[in-house]
Image 1 (cartoon, rainbow, N blue to C red):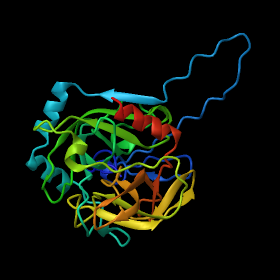
Image 2 (image 1 turned 90 degrees about the vertical axis):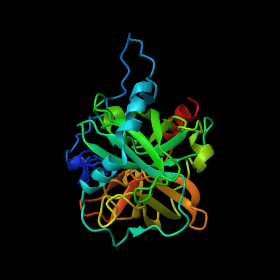
Image 3 (image 1 turned 135 degrees about the vertical axis):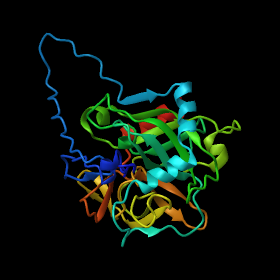
Image 4 (image 1 turned 45 degrees about the horizontal axis):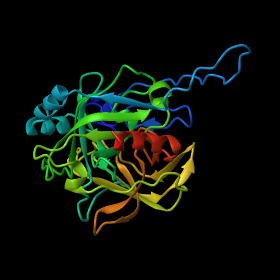
Length: 318
């Protein structure tokens, strides 16, 4: 689920309605709020041609960077008034019944990711600070940073506010310095996961030195009870409070699914195994990526495999 300003799961006011990235594999609805259906390109056949030398494979990870000025401008752009306005600009219907307001120790690592989408609309997603070599990485959905199958349509003016709750920013605001996504997302709208690298805060502190970082489990067998968290643009919360779905993960259409009816704005929120509400901590095993319908009953997340690990490594080592 992406953003919310008109695109909550991922793009504009229109996006806020639950963006509609149609995946060929099962037609799950992307949590981007865009209102446009993307058609995935057919894969190219891997045929050998006699007498020709095949080009070296492209780097499976695509990286997008923001300049120092862009990052300063992003911090100045997201004023309290603008943040309040973006939440009021989207209403995706009533919350629940599967999504419940989160009650427990506030997870410092989970927050709202504000940005201007590729169409120029203010909106938001959800992201999570994770353990990383550079102490500056967070995970979200790829559709929260760029449109799939559309390399030129990228989001800008991006900041991460961990622990956001009802206008409060208890741990500060971090400008996003760079984002890494699978190249498969950029070209074919597959593998909907992204890693962010953020600047230190205004006091020079790195992200996970301030809020900690959750561990990430790659190549984990699908199953077990999972808690999905996100800032859904449903009322009465309208992105101002963290919502939670709990369910057993099952493999479906090449992804994993849990019962959940969060929508736009929750995109990129973490799926946490072994989640403890007393500490607000768990192990990140996926992120909110897409829904089964406009009136959802299921949330889908990628199975974090080799490509997701390469995306994470690219970010944590930058």
